[in-house]
Image 1 (cartoon, rainbow, N blue to C red):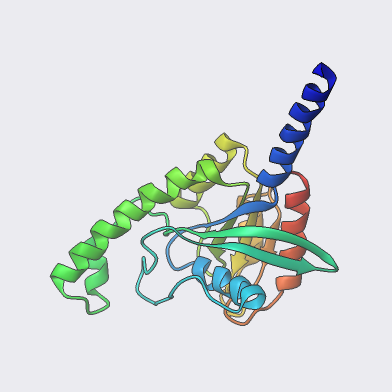
Image 2: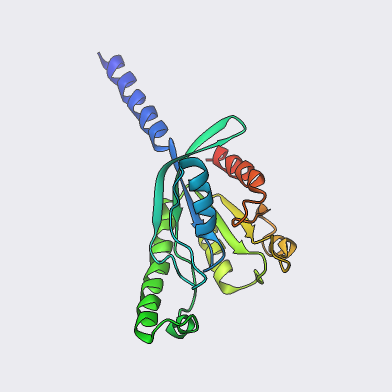
Length: 213
């Protein structure tokens, strides 16, 4: 009787562990307008037929955490099910006047700034729930800044597996080497979320990280 109970106990533990890892939480982090939602949209559309959120040239279009569950990614005959989590862009300072440059009215700009600030706080809180994080950076911008260092620092503190994506390689000013030099301890994959360029390498890197969990 005791042996049966012990066997049942361990069976339950292994079942719960397996169940927990059946759907890995894949978070997309980075500064505003780096292409987080564009990449998350492409992945979700490719494997579920539906996007995850809207994109815009106006900074902080994504101001709340949005997610899509049970996104089964197939790569070279292998399958992993992810919960895709797209987070608001991280910024150290959000000024409503920044939005007025995009012809938003002062009232709307202030409201957007308020929501964007709340979104940054929400993004950081969600880090504790992540299994894997993709940090999306704009490869046309200088990677040496406080925002990127803050994001990477938070991930290091939590020991979360990280893949850095250098997005917008379709643009002439793209410079992947600068991002590689800024974060030499991480794998950097250059892609174009807009045109779906080099996603094969991206998926390969994600699967490698998933194996480490």
